[in-house]
Image 1: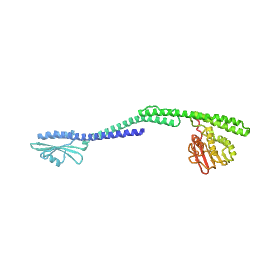
Image 2: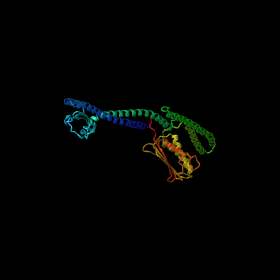
Image 3: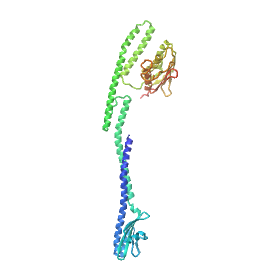
Length: 423
């Protein structure tokens, strides 16, 4: 925008300078032309006075002196046909001037001869003053050069002033754009400084109001989610008491383990809701995925599902917090149990990426993904439809990507980016 404003001012200034300097240059040329002719005409009149006296010697002295000191050569054609001064053939214009006419004649070489006739007792004399083309343009090129330099100086000055003004204007807009970018990245503490033109100040004030409103709405939303998650604790407590009353130690241990995991998930939801969202984190994907696969293996055995786990033995560090990766893995594996019939086999594969990070693939042999299953809030099976979205957001927050396919069953692929380098 700064460049465009400067170019606009430069184009406008150029048009103004052309409209002003071109007529002025033509006027300078005309003035030089008229000045040369006026000087030549004055010289011709002065010599005609001596030609009218009939004093041949005085006339010769004056003509000789004039040709020596003045730039315009003088020739006097006497009535008897003799020529005094600069030799020049008697042209048709000279013969016309002998009839008593005074005229200016343009010559083929670009010069002009000024002819002035003077009547005397012995006949009519013609005074010829020759003005060469260079005298007609004397000082013109120098004046044009000065005008051109003046035009360039004015243009450069206008561009400099326009650039400074555009910079002050664009700087305010750039600051607004930077504030908007920070707000878009989640930094709700960003504030725009109202400065610059009145319109930009109004936009900055409105942007600050919008940021404050968004911050207030987010705080209220977090509190609502935290309150909702906290309400789940009461039925969890009752469920925990019921589990303690079971007589079978194995059933009691398994149920208590599931309840403990659910309590951790509820606590994590409350903590996540009460703190602003933050990017970053790191964990060992191998350890987290292995723990979650072992957790779901028990339920897979109960439902007679074949589970093929292909997990690497070496640590794979990814740019995601452990609890977030746990939630993503649980969401994907939970979808397998929720949306496929009992006995449906599934597999979990974890491998390293060449550029760092890891790839997690969860694939089952079920009916495949329903239409719009990858859209948030759509499941097609009566659930909340948030499981796949949780996995998607986890992959993207690590700097990776998410993909869902249904070649034969459902295949979900999470590309988990590497952790950010330590500062």
